[in-house]
Picture 1 (cartoon, rainbow over the protein chains, first blue to last red):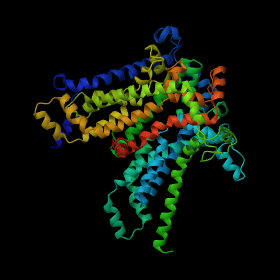
Picture 2 (cartoon, chains in turn blue, green):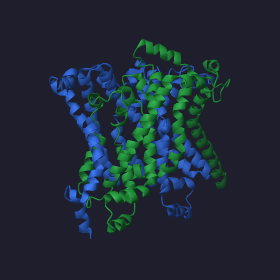
Picture 3 (tube, each protein chain N blue to C red):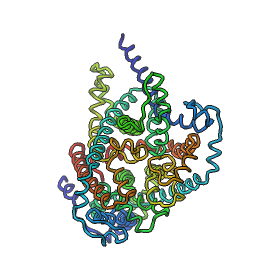
Picture 4 (tube, rainbow over the protein chains, first blue to last red):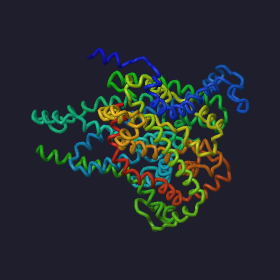
Length: 309
Length: 290
C-alpha cells in the first residue's frame, strides 16, 4: 500500500490531452495571461546589460556588459539605500513579530464573546485600508500642528517634526506599519490558538496549573510552529521595506534614512528615465529576493511541512 | 490577594488594555471623519479632535461638485467591475484543474511551476512598465486590469478549498458520465461558494486600493483611478509641474481632503462586514496550511 502511494506521488509528466483536455482548456486563458504579462517582460531584464535607448528598443540598443552594475556600485547612494532597506525591513519584522502573538493570547483570555469579536473586527480593519488613504491621515495627524504634537505639548514635550526628522521618520514608518498590520497577525494566531487541543488545558487544570502557566506551557508551544512559519516566510521580505508606505510619506528631507531600493528604482527609472540603471538595480533586488524566498520556503518545508501548492 | 481576586484583576486590566488597542485603531479614522464634517476655520485652528466642530456638510457639497473626483471615481468603478470579474473567472478556472491530484492530471506540476516561478521572481519595474507601453495599453483600463488578471494567491486559496471537497461527489457524477466541465459547473462551483466569495472580496479590495499602476500606466490625469487621484493630491514630494502644484494647493484644504478620504474609504467599510464573515476560514487555509 505504502509503495503505491510513494510511486504515485511523482508520476511522469505527461500531457494526456485525450483524458485531460478539459482541464488544459480551463487553464489556458490564465496561463496565456501569465506568459504575456509575467514571462514576456523577463526579456526586458536584458536592459540591465544594455545602454538602453527607447526608440531603438530592447534588442536594438547597444550592449553595455556589466557597466550598469559597475556604475551602480560606484554611486554613493547605493550602499546607503541598501542599508536603509535592510534596516527598515528588519525593524518592521522584529516589532511586528511579538505584538500579534501577545494580543492573540490576551484576546483568547477574554470571556465575553461579543467583546472578543468586536476587538478582533476593529484591529483587523486597518489592514484593508490603502497606504494612500492612511498617508493622507498620517500626514495630518503627525504634522507639526497635528493631534499627536498637540498631545505631546500637553506633557510639555517639544514638537516632533515627524515628516522631516531623519530618526523620527523611521520610527513613524515602523509604528504605522505595525498599526496597520498587527490585526492581521492576531487573526492568524487566534485561529491557531483555537486549534490547540482543549483536553491539554483540562489536564493542566487538574494538575493545578493556573492561567499563566497554561499559557506558558500549552498555548505558546501550541502556536510556536505557526509563529516560526510566519517568521521564516518573512525572510523573503527583508528587501521589501514597504514601497507604498514610504513613497507616500517621504520627502527629500528624509532620503538619508528612508530612501529604499524600490523608491530609488522608481526615481531612477521613471523620473530620471535612466532605464538601464533602474533595471540593473531592480534585477539585483529580484535575484536576491528570489534566493531568499526559495531558502525560506525550503526552511518552512523542512520545519513545518509547509508547501505552497 | 486571593487567587480569585488576582484573576479578576487580570481580566479587568486585560479588557481595558484590549479596548485601548481597539480604540487606537479606530481613533485616526474617527478623527478624519470629524475633520471632514467640521467647519474649515475650526480645523485650521486645530480645534477638531474626535467630534466635528461647527458641523457642516460644506466639504461634501464641494466634493460633489468636483468633476475630477467623480471622473476618477468612475475609472475606479470600471476597473473594479472589470478587474474583479476577470480575476474571479480566472481564479475559479485555474483552481479547479490544479486541485486535481498528479495521478489524475500529470501535467499539473508544469503549470504549478509556471505559477510559482512568477510568484517569487519579478522582472522588476522597468520591464513591466515597458511591456504595458509596448502593448499600447497606456491610458486604457486594460493596463489596470490585465497585468493583475491572474491572482496567484487567490488561486492557491481556492485550490486548497476544492481539494478538501469530498471526492465521492465527483466520482458519482463521473460514473454517470459527466465530464470535467459538467462536474465543474454543476458540482464544484456551487460547493465552492464560500471561497469564491472570499477571493471576490479580496480582489475587490485589491483593485479598489491599488494606485501605483494607475500612476505609472496613465499619462492623462483624467484616466487616474480614485486612489491615484488621491495620491496625486496628497503627495507633495512628487509635484511634476507648477500648475498642478497650485491646483493642489487650492484643493488641499484639509476638510476637503478629509471628505475625499472618507468617501474613498467608504466602499471598504461597506464590504468589510461581509469579508469578516468568510475571512477567518480563508486565512487559516491560506496562510497556515498551504
